[in-house]
Length: 128
Image 1: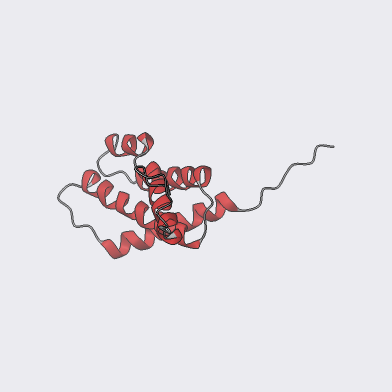
Image 2 (image 1 turned 90 degrees about the horizontal axis):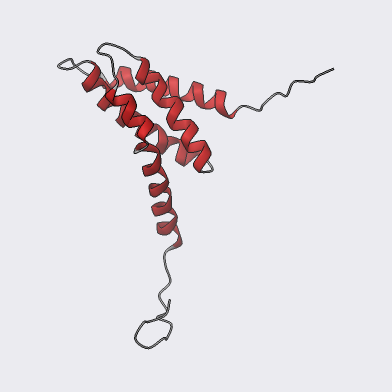
């Protein structure tokens, strides 16, 4: 990096890992602040679990389009999905107790099943 006053190199070496973490964080922001996710929250029908399942589909699809997923990113995406579930529950079931353990298990099952479905090898049809 050049110093603006002198044009000399400053010699600072940026931490590559920190830079990669910041990039990953920015990629996740685009997923969670997607208008489709906001639309899901706005159109919640009280007592309906539709948004619970749709959110996983939308988040995984968006993540697969915008970044290369690995185990760490997948876990972080699940945590963002679960944060969405907590917001969703407050709107879908106002005033009711949120059973975090039960919802986390259901969310993990739902998330993992769709992720496996989305990332399984595609079978191409053979036309005879």
